Image (cartoon, rainbow, N blue to C red; front, side, top):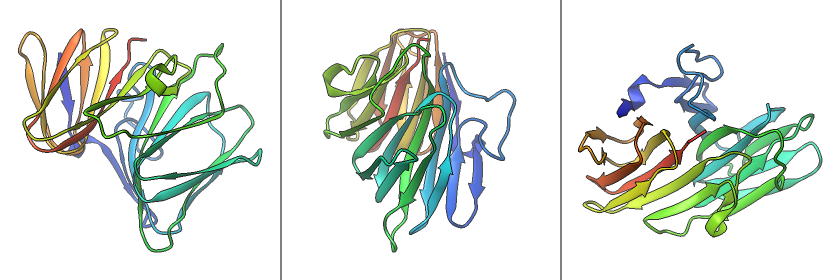
Length: 233
């Protein structure tokens, strides 16, 4: 079953220095029926104004994945660690109790655009505090996984996160690990198709809940960039 969640249904914020779209409850946006999906707690697309910053803050025990779409960001923690991430790169932060984290748009003239995901972290797992990977330009790249398969970022959770780039008319099939997944169009329009030939159309910024499907095929109606988050737990 595929249940779309359009960009227009998502929560929105405009603070001047920050513009954001929230898939699930976040900040001032609250919907008691949308507190997350399986272990996926947060899925935001945010644009930070030039030289803008998120001040240091602590987090629950989550893995935070930042996928930079445009611009360059610097991330710091209260232990003195810092890393810069540019467009075409993704950073995974394994948050720790008592440590605060900040984010800064390094450009004084251009906005920073990125996707941010929070995934609940298993309490018994400990991973490197910071991990970074570059996109490889392939039609489907495993961006994050529980065991770091194929050079992917290593999560503290049973989740497989795929970055998808398709040209118009191309398709990509996926075998899912369990009963739940979430699909997000970053740019472009697509059709998501199940083996039972259920078909749903998504356009730029739309997402979709995937339930009780073992396979899913994405068909690009225009040039497409998106994320498929396989959430069996």
